[in-house]
Image (tube, rainbow, N blue to C red; front, side):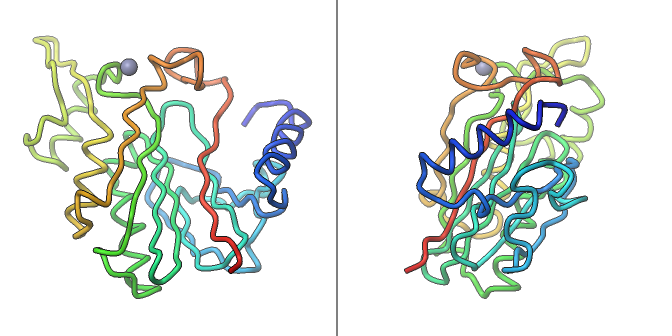
Length: 225
Ligand SMILES: [Zn+2]
């Protein structure tokens, strides 16, 4: 959003070339920090492949069983969550910052995989990608109050609280808990544990560089067998 469209297109063409997939397979959503999940049918393949305007609106997550669709979420500090059920051959992707995390979008993706595709929790494997980490994600009293109302006081999701009401939010653990609460075995979940704010030489970080920065993509695709 706000980037030079020609550069975005050039980068995506380059990425598709490197990956050996069609540029028209990239499928993206407009990412509004909410919990709506879209089931991606053949017809929706390629939505937002070349620009933000044609991305699927009012949506932060996708699920599909259609091969050759690269579900791609874009972020600069928010958490990419990628899911795969190798038994049913179903994939999911979610973009989740602190708002999506407290709106439980990750949990909603698992529900959709179960309800619409018959996926079993024990079969789903999940990768939680690079995002701003608990080392750097300082939040204020309002966000802390919302996070605590959803996640209670437990598990250390909020750490290093100060007398002026600030603290650090662990988005990785908060999303991991959503997955385990849905019955996904902890051993099926891999957390990259890479902080985008610390690793700003590798990743865009909106907190460090300002909102008007680039985004990096995290994607997942089923290959045609
Ligand atoms: Zn950090």
